[in-house]
Length: 388
Image (cartoon, rainbow, N blue to C red):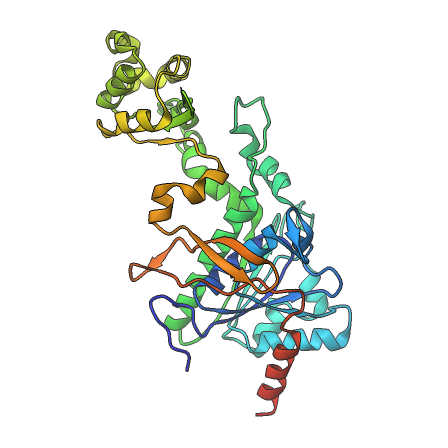
């Protein structure tokens, strides 16, 4: 029996992943980091197209590596009855099956939740779609920037009439985190329900709306005529303050915080401005106040500004580029990055798992796989299980 430890909480759990791109892949990579055996089913030829997007080496892109570490890859041609049969055998030994195919694809293959769970009721089956299974858009293709448009992300980056993308695959990634939480909850429920699995439907669209709603949708939450509407929460994001070597972000929330900001930029006169006194007044005039602070001529470095605000307990940090992160003393201290000697890629730099179980970082996980790298070994395991 597999030993479950605080640092390997999903040890002994087997996951079979049918997917392309990020949503299911990132979710299952988190399972692999936590000790699960994740088998990624890829088509022969190019495999998951994510392998070829962006910076790449030897058929493995940086994006693919970051979403597929510690997994095993098997190539199966799901257009053939033989390989569909092999896929079904894999599912019959799995604790979790997850896919991000459009509605109807897995049903046509004979690999739907109903079909598999009829034979293996303990199976947890997670189906990720773009728009869900009902409604006029069900079945349409979905990618990150399409979801940014549909869910409201694009109207939050500036004025409502301006449409701008968040320049990271935020919808894909937050759907992955939503899926990971849902599957983990289902595994927990299975332990309490005598080994009974369940089906999970999860759409990118609903995941994105649920993610945005707590703050971005707060003005649409309270209904009726007696609602007092405050400034949009986005207005509380003050413009960065320029420094002599870059910029800093700050989060001044109290009168004392603002007094420290005014002093820092040499605008102590603003303390006596009535419209900037108290949270209610500042909320109304936050846009112009932030613009005034941002327009001041920089006279200090970013570190000097951050340390000056820290003396008054004002949250602040320098605006760092991604390239700056590995060398930042705090990020080094908390062990965010881990080096790996990849058997194909050579030396690479990974981000460690953020969750600490038992207060200890998860161990560095295994490398991302080459296409079909583990096909033979997985088929041998299947044969041994079928003929013990």
